Length: 391
Ligand code: NI
Image 1 (cartoon, rainbow, N blue to C red):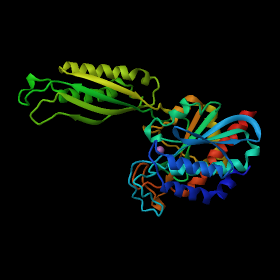
Image 2: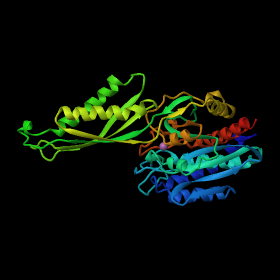
Image 3: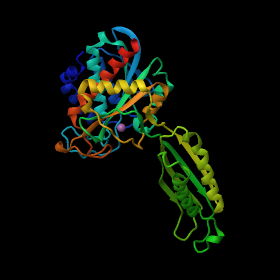
């Protein structure tokens, strides 16, 4: 077994592919050329590919030489509507940018594919490579679950390259890693009157303001402080003119938590606060609540151990570091709800090389010297998982 050496052998290939995909970022649900290029890359390794007639992304199939379970490795492939300011020679010029490092994810998984093909006779089961579209939409992964792509898969592993984590460190930690994401809209209806005579109207702006404050009071007073919860109102639109009492306000917001239990009751509790706050001020309010990805929680003891041990086998205990959990979200949660999964992080940050910007920044870059380590970790996790479960 020489996964580490194979990853080093493919280092130049991995970096070359990362730069290629970096030049052609496509937005979520538009990853047509990216999907085609990945399919070609996999076919050139004699890997069988499944594409979808009505959706982007694809699956590569590597059949092991021995019977066993099936493990899926996942990389997301979409870019962001960010105008790139890195000044890199391979910077994107199409108005979009791989500002979240999904180009690195594609390259790392292609590197893993090369390694796994080389050792496929030794694999005690099968590996599926999921190149997933539309992660940035918060629900792109759901398509694959709904369309049976995970049927027959026994476990899934994914990771993210991270701009605030020092390269080449990896973070492979049990427990909560990323929060759930649910979004909402609130419409407040009042009655207009002259701005000098508020008593003749019903002020939707005052009612909306009270709702905003009461939602924050829910977070600080009704939610258990040991349970991380964010409720943010991101937009607020209302009113017609400076001297008219507003009869309509629309607001949009997002909710992040780690509590699966809270997600079962929160919508009802917020609706009560929102409707009653408006009512107390003579207005009416309506809540529309949209459920997206759940929390990403590494809560499978066996997968936690296999991921940890894979990294230690490759690069030693010193390659691992702790990282606080994030209130950001990942639609990998949809995949983990379907099959047991593990989600990790690999560092992109390198101050000496001037690579210091965080994900989604228009100057975001990654320390490319870590990419082959990501490939090795993908491959080692798959190899070790299959070996352990074949026993
Ligand atoms: Ni991302």
